[in-house]
Image (cartoon, rainbow, N blue to C red; front, side, top):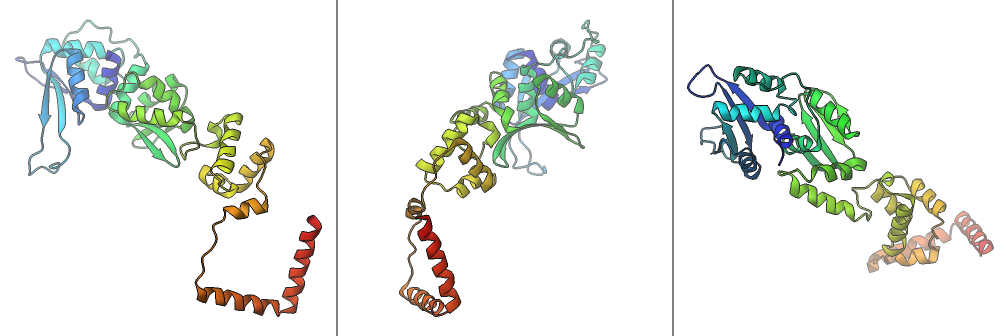
Length: 312
């Protein structure tokens, strides 16, 4: 663990309270989360403070929800040490951190601009981020009311899309998800297992609804299409549906890669035979006889047969 991770997690899940008192610290720090492991690791890393388990009472509107774990620091020495170490990275809570250090008469450089690194992003992601399967792909999302922190994260990463509203969000598209995971994983605690799961799934590089065509190189796409068409016996239409594109798009790739198509005979063998009841068979037979008695129908069918013979 690093102080940058603590700063990122604190910006997402922490709070600073100010009191008019002299016995204990007039500034109190609290970090709250439902994940006990991350709270204990932060406490062990800082080597000060206390961890509490909070259960809601029956008369509380939160009764029955997950247990909340809280890290608290009360003494002037402990609070001062924590604030001085997270100051170089803090963005969301920066004004309160500076205010707290002024109250505690700290000698820290309060004018130094905050640094951004993957440790901070991992801490912020563990607190205010999520990775979800949506719209046939994996998406990473970070949300906060503070636009500045999302802009700084996006600028540092070099990818991601920003959306501003009452609660702003930064999303990482499928193309950049592997890069995000690779850099955040060494620091992540809360979402580490989920990131590992997604990473292993992305490694397979087989066609999965998580992927879009642009996620493949030409060689990988050709190999994938051949496997789906010849090995898995999927039709072009089914491949297009699975990949979320049109029939013509896949057909054009087949032509570009010169992937041989099945003959009508081979395609017909892949269609399971229909099983009709005796009553249904009788109705079909009667309908065919009735159609064949129609002169126009017979002429049309004979023309089709003649064209078919010419092609042969």
